[in-house]
Length: 454
Ligand code: UDX
Image (cartoon, rainbow, N blue to C red; front, side, top):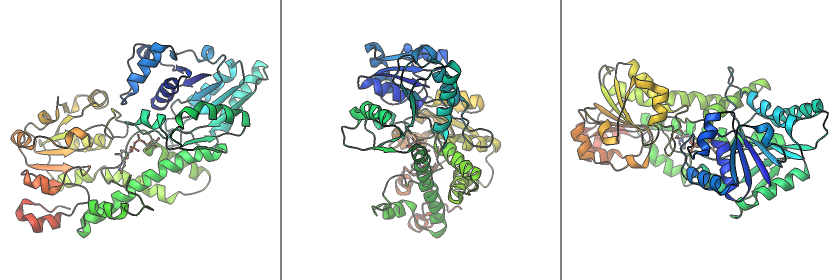
C-alpha cells in the first residue's frame, strides 16, 4: 500500500510517521523545501515526545520518504491524506485555500483509483468541495479515473500525539463508498489491536464530530473556569468541588481542571470556526459564544490578582514566569495564555524573566527580546518580586523552595494551574494565590500570612 500525506505539521507528520511505523510505505509532502530537507536529516519542525525516533528509524528503513513534489509522488498512490493548514480567515472561519490547492494538484496528477482523505480540521462540506475540485481537474485532463473522498478527523493531543495515534480511543471515518471503506479499514487495522472501535459514518457527520468534540472539551474547561471564579467569591475551593463532581461517572474526572484558559492550535480556532458555521446557517451557538468569552477573560484572571496584590503598581516589578507553552510537553506557543499575560505585564511597566523546558526557542521567535529568558527555573526567580506558574510542566512540581526563597525579593506565588497547595506554600514561607481557591478559609487558619484579594 502506498500512502501520500500532504502537510508535515503536527497532524501530517504524526500520521505519516505512525503509518510507516506499522510497515506501510509513506511519502510525506510539504511545499516548504527547508522543512523537507531538515526532515531528511532527522531535524523535526516540532517537539513531540517519541516522534523523532519514529521518523529517523522509518526514514532509515526506507519506509518513510520526504518530498516537495506532490505531482510526482501521487502517481501510483492508493491513499492520499490532506493534512495542510486551515488558518482562520479574517472572519474566523477556516480558510480552505491550501486544502483545495492540494485537491487540485491531486486531480491533475493522480494515475490510479485513489482515496483522498481530509485529515485537517475542516468545516462540514469541505470533503464535497475537495471532491468537486478533483473531479474538475480530472475533467480538464480528459481523464475518467475513479476516486473517493473520505473525512478522517484526527483527535491527537499535542504532547501525546504519537501515543494517541498508535493507540486511538476511536477512529472516525466519513466515507460513502464500500471500496474506500475497505481500504481504510485495512490501513487502520494495525492500530485497532486494543479493541477500540473504528466508526464509519457519512461524511458530514465525521466532519462535524471533530468540531463537536473540541467544542465540548472547550466547554468543559470554560465551565470549570466560571465555577472556579464563583468559588472564590463564595469561599469554596474549586479543587474540592472538582473532585466532588468528577466522581460522578456521568461527569467524569478528566478535563475539568480550571486554569488560565485554554490555548493551542485547536480549541480557540475550532470554537471560532464552529460559531461561524452556525452564523452562516443562521444559527446562534449561544453556549460556544459564552465559552469563548469566558476563555478570553480567564487569560486575564492572574493579572487581575497580581494587580490587586501590588495595589495596581507593577512598574519595575520583576516577575519570574515558569512555563510559556500553551500546555506541557510541547513547544507550541500558539494562543498560549503566557503571551497575553506577558503583554499585560509589560504594558504595566513590569519586567519578565521566563523559563520553559522546551519552548524558549519558539517563544523568542514570537516575543523577541521584550523579556529575558532564563537557563533554568531557579535562575528565572533571581530578584523576582513574584513567581508566576503558567504551564504545569512536571519539573515545576517539586522545586527547591529554600533556594528559590533566597533568590527572590518577594514572597508570593501566583499559580495559574493549581499545581501547588496553599498549605505547602505557606509552610514554605510564601503567600499563595491559585485559581478558585478559598482565601477566606486560609485566612482563618493562617491569619495575617494570607492576604485576601478579589
Ligand atoms: C486538543 C484535543 O484534546 C485533541 O483531541 C484535538 O485533536 C486537538 O485539540 P491539544 O490542543 O493538543 O488537543 O491540547 P489539550 O491537552 O486538549 O489541551 C488544550 C488546552 O486546554 C490547553 O491549553 C490546556 O491547558 C487546557 N486545559 C485542558 C485546561 O485548562 N483544563 C483541562 O482540564 C484540560
